[in-house]
Length: 599
Image (tube, rainbow, N blue to C red; front, side):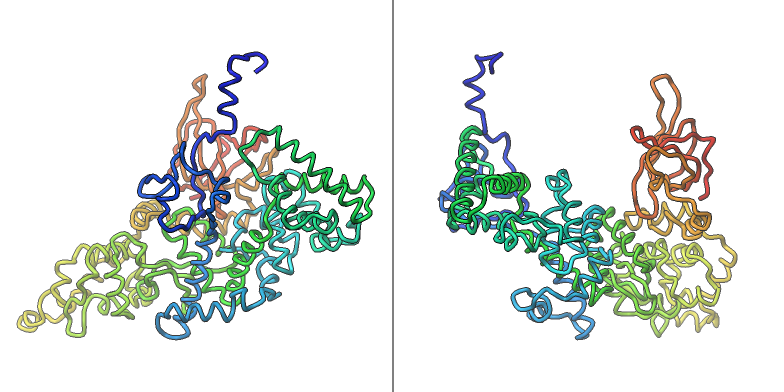
């Protein structure tokens, strides 16, 4: 403004004004006849306050409104769904909501049950078993939590409070772990400070802690300490200069109070206020953090006591999210569990754990062409011992109405009939044979077991089942190759199946040779590594040099980008091994002469 004074008036008018309007993910305002109390507009069917004349979030309280933040709803829905699974198995029927609530109240609800089961902290938080655990989806949060070795809900709350950008930038997480590992080194300038900060080893982790310090050390009233919190933490619509003045007055009041009420020296009182002021840059509310920790504990409790039910619930929660489901499947496989193909005898309307298969089984309803009514009919008529049981009733008539040709095509495409006895006794070796038998002859099969009506078959004397003839016709037929299966099954399920992207025999081969995935080649080094090419783009540099840009993935679904100099054809999901450079600034690179396709 010194250089362009003529714009000062306009800048001051715009200073601290809202640039745009946003909507809080979990913020809910409950008020009767709300339209009579504040301006409202409808945006895509949702009520919100308008940009210019509307009520700002910071002004709600002074205008008599109360805003609620409802967060962690997805997690609580997963808890409810998991309890429903458990009760369905135990009761042999679908439970009523009252029964789900009773289970929750008896075993989980923090109003009635102390969340202090050490088996939970040991099985999940101290043992790195993370699928579906609220607040612990990132590797960094998991690593920090494992280093903390939590033993209580407050420990979990501290982890969630500290593991955020502000504290991480200040290395508070590293300092906290060091302090927890040797609590004797924690320094307290006054016994009251130890009373307040002892459980967090001298670190201010929550806003409530510095409010309590203000009350106990400096003589602040509860109301004054809350004003202190708002001054230090909350953003407002006043000028920065005014806020600076308020902070200076607050600092003086705090230090004077520490000296007169608690007998502290000026230097440690000033140091304590500076620590509080620094904390306010990333301050977190304890009630918020502990509520999150309790939500997290609920999932961890179910993971500890009903692990397969919880993991099946996690898979179901991600079932409509292709990337989320792939990531969850990878997480669960890392725990040593198997995930099977969909199967007509074991799959249902949602993800399930099969004791017989000792694997998690995908739902049939996730396949394109298999509707809810078809799934119900399939489940009602099973088990299916053989292909004849699947297609015909006891009288030899076509047994299905809702389970139509399209649904059959989907199940065969996904290789979901492997539990039929024809595969066990060797009459069928692959699902391509089954496609030729069923899909190509669907009209004849619909006429009945003999390819015609029973009366006509008896009249002609030809009582040989049509399936026997068709089975002999496909003997020795080769299976679809890997790329054909990837194309077919991706079209049917909406995502490339994990076992086809990473064939177990290929992955075992690279692991036996101790070849690491591309993502494990450290920055600044060169090494032999393998990767799967999930997306490939052919490019040219400014000087006309050809290269290929590849989005590479590995079994943990880590994504890396690699530049390959030269011209090369890379089919989607082909797997390669070769020598790769990992430049700390430019990323991964290699050339076509250093690569070899292995699948």
